[in-house]
Every structure is written in structure tokens, then in C-alpha cells.
Image (cartoon, rainbow, N blue to C red; front, side, top):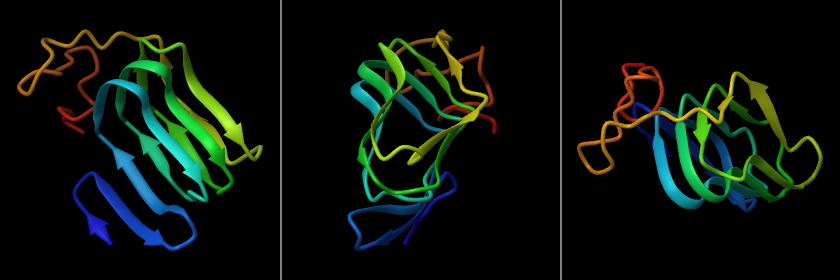
Amino acid sequence: MLESPWITCTAEPQGGAVGVVVRFNTIYNSSQNVSLSRDTTRVVLERNILVKARESNVTAYKLDGTANVIRENVADAAPVFLLKDGTPGSVIDGGGNLRGHDPRFDSIGCEGFNSARFKSYGARSHG
């Protein structure tokens, strides 16, 4: 079991994460900002800033798990917000996701990624 102020995780041997909360992260410039796959179950993505993805902000790839929820995130600069490939209902858009909203970072780099526009989201959040 891994615990931090922002991410909690309980792993089980079924081939996917179980009981993970991913909150207050900034993920920038990747193929997919977040990818869920296989038997991943009860994962919650919330209050993250997901920007600049070549494929999607969130990908559900061959996802067969259940009760995965994506809610209250800021997303920008990807062809699609959520790309689903798996069992219907394996991932739920829980609402409150702000798509196509540029966070207008102060700079890109270790000391950057501050968004005056979305202060209660992402790694620099005042959550």
C-alpha cells in the first residue's frame, strides 16, 4: 500500500490498480496524460490538470474493471478528453471536467506549472 497526501493505492494481483485516488497532479506533454487498463477498478481521477497529450487526456485501454471515475479535472491540448476501449461502463465521466481550458501556466519547468486561472487544481494547488 502506497500513501501520500495526494495518491492512495491498494494493489491486488488481478492485473490492474485497485482503490487508487489520483488528485492534485499536473501532467504535461505525453501520449496520454493518464491511462487506465485491464482490471483497474475503483480509480478516481480528480482535481488534476491534464495538458498536451498526443492521443487523449485520459485513455481507458482494454479496461474491464469497474467503478473508475473521472471528475473535476482541467484538460487541454489533446485530440479527445476521454478515449474508451473496453467494457462499456468501465469508466464514468463523473462531471465537472473542464475540457479545452488552457491553464495558462506561468512557465514550463520544475518551478513552473503554476496556473493563476485554476488555483484549486493540479500539483501547485492550494486544494
